[in-house]
Length: 335
Image 1 (cartoon, rainbow, N blue to C red):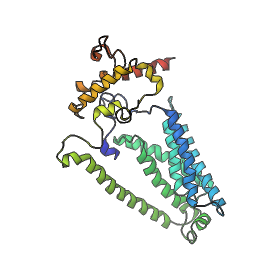
Image 2 (image 1 turned 60 degrees about the vertical axis):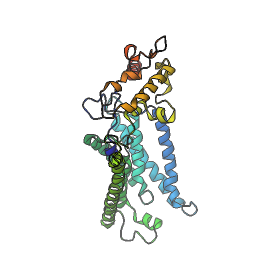
Image 3 (image 1 turned 180 degrees about the vertical axis):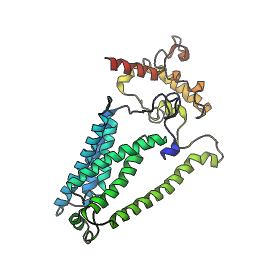
Image 4 (image 1 turned 45 degrees about the vertical axis):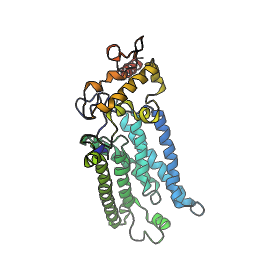
């Protein structure tokens, strides 16, 4: 899906990974909300893993082991990602939060059948798998904004393999009566048949996903061409002007920047006038017309958008809001 959708665009319409792109780092607007959402997700993961027992009475030991494994895997993965991120001068909180999610995904398959030390190892390796897969996608030029492929796909596959490597015989017999007598974790002496079964499962699941989801995305992407409605429109993406302004403005009547940036826009009514002008011109702007005057970022000006008589002379008297944001960030960094 991310490959067919294509990379995100900067404020001038240049795709990510292109040499002319302003920056290959597209960061979110509110790290606090991102962290809050991740901790809510972490808390809910206990219900997802431990709740899969469908009961607590008579299963307290099993539930406790699941909760412990979930906690250790998430914590170890997050800690390793944090240590890796702090090597440089800049610290990326989003990467650390994704590392935590990598640990949660990695432990889910085997949370009920592994010991504490194995959960720690699974989470640690899951963090390394996440960082390696993320770097590989970037090198291949695939822009996955949420890194769903690396987290839920690659780390999920590692979790399935880890279950065949670290599954304890007694835990398997407890959770799945009648199983675990001959086939359990490879590293614990259970042989390789369980590992082989898990590998076959991953390959079949990957093939099914590739064929079904790939076909769906391809049909949606090329639907206008197939229906002879348009030769250039990609139905997986919104028009360029709407993507640049933000879907929250175009579809949800919101504002994509946090409140501390609002003072940069001295006249919201004037900004609305420019946005309406862009919306009116969007039907005349093709998505592939990168660099055209209709896509000039000066249209997104936040200063002196209207002259005293109410006419729009933004092209002559303004600077772009993106440049103002960068200037504001540099001034805050200097302080």
